[in-house]
Length: 268
Image (cartoon, rainbow, N blue to C red):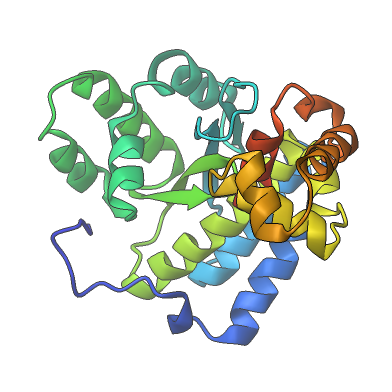
C-alpha cells in the first residue's frame, strides 16, 4: 500500500507514453452520451485492459462539488457497477464521512493495497472506523481483495474513485488508474453539469478576455478601465454582455464569479 511516506513513488503524467494517454483520453471522453449502466461497463472494461486482466473490475465513483466556484451546491453523485447495496450503504453512511477520500484529496495521492492493509491504515483514525472497515470488508468479499482509491479533479468538482480488483497491482498500474481518474472526473462533471460545455464553447474576443482576466485578479472597474485604456461604462457593458451570454444555471453569479468559473475551466 502506498502513502505519502513513499516519496520514491512518482505519479508524473510524463511517465505514461503519450499514445497511451491519448488513447485513454479519447476512450473516456467519448462516453459522455452513454447511459450510466453502459458507461460503467465501458469504464470497467477500459480499466481491466489497463491492468492487463480479463477479470471484472468493480468501480464506485463519487463526484462532489469542491465548493469554491460559487455555483449552486449539488448533493454528491454516485455511480457504480456494483450492487445497489454497495451504492446505498455508501450514500447513507459514508458519503460525508469517508476518511480515505478526505486523506487522498488532502495528500493528492492514491491509496491502494489489500483490504487488510487499507483497514490497518484506517485504524490510525478512530472516528467512524468500524463503519468504514465493515464496508471495506464487504467490498473486498464481493469485488476482490485489492482496493485502489484514487482522487480526481475536474474544473469545479472532485472525484473519489474506488476500484476493486482480484489481482494485486503494481506502481505502473496505480499510475495508469490515477491518470484515468482525472479523465473520469472530467467526464462525470460534464454529465452532471452539462451547461459547462456551453460555457467552454463560448467565444471571447481579446478585449473581453482582458476585462474578465483583470476582474479575476481583483481589480476594480476604474482600475481595469485605466489599465486597458477604455472607459468604465465599457467595462460594465462587457460584464453585462458576458452575464447575458452565460448559461441559465449560472445567471445568479456576479460577473467576477463567472470569470472565476471560466478560469477554473481553463479559458482565462
